[in-house]
Length: 492
Image (cartoon, rainbow, N blue to C red; front, side, top):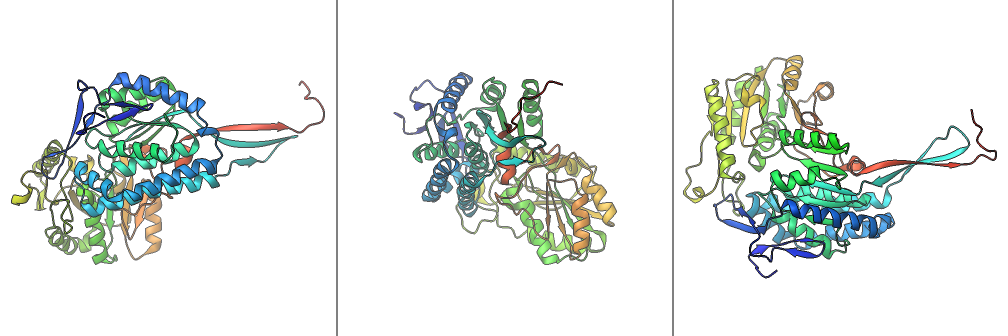
């Protein structure tokens, strides 16, 4: 790399970025509008070369034929290396995404845990011996697809990237990773760490490009045999359509508009804290954000009053400030989108109870901050109750009883997550079973770990990441039969 100011990427051991004529992607720090980093931009022509190299690495390198414990050793090493570079990676993520410092440290820990978990799964995974129905022995084997395309979003880059790469590599695949153009730096560092940890060359290539060219080239390339995508539902439909024409499998984790339900018998102090964390954590830029709050009518006014008072005290500030509870949103364009939805809510008759504006704090004037916002006075059919905002905007709605809240909670094209607060565990069980959501939290919210499957119902996704399901996502099943009969098979 001759230009130390530009992060290059590798294709088959060749650094892409030395050519000064190469276009670049500039990452902007959402906290102050400064340049967070510059990376060399991948182009559609790079995809052809990357797919060919990945295909050859899959076929000719020993990776997929190694014993599971041998692949696991490399995955364990990657997890250890991530922790060894914890602070530098966290700082890079903070500058790229604007997330508060403590959250960035936690995300590095989670990414390292993802590799350690799939290392453990890899070396303990058992193929199935199936019950025979004749004179033969039969079993079902998990086999890799070959070249997998992984396309990740900007809101939690290192976590999203690790929970796709780790299981895909564990099974034996080669991976082409396209990170979001908003947060491209972490993926390049992750690629470097994987290479330095002993992953054979060509099995992971990072392509920092734009969705409309590099993403599209990956999705449509005949050499790509499986696609994993996390992002918006509209883009997911386009990718699924292309995959359907090519008859290749996809894993999709898409949008959400999650109902967060509080019953009158809930521990209200814990429920308020859970609601605040559920929507204003990560500045609302979370697919599982509890953006639709349903509160039982008998406690609605009391609960909302306390919620508004505590929301107004949230410390919005620079990500590097250890007292900050909520940082900026990802970009100026995204902040404009959030503000436009708040305007739509006003026009629909909503009342802004707190927030609904850009903060007037001098230290934040150059960044893309937006105050945590609560709106009520609407019904569930309003646009801001039905469309994903992906920002710190909460819409509060009252409900009468179980039947009412189940109907309203399920009245959405999305079905990613839901939360329930009640002291009645029979009720919690009934409602959890009725809600159309891939994850349901009871008396907690946004808890997640790599061992539990994650994904959505309806327009929120296809298939499941994490857990054993995550390993199955990146594998295809081969059935093998051994004949045990002593006599020839008879015709007819």
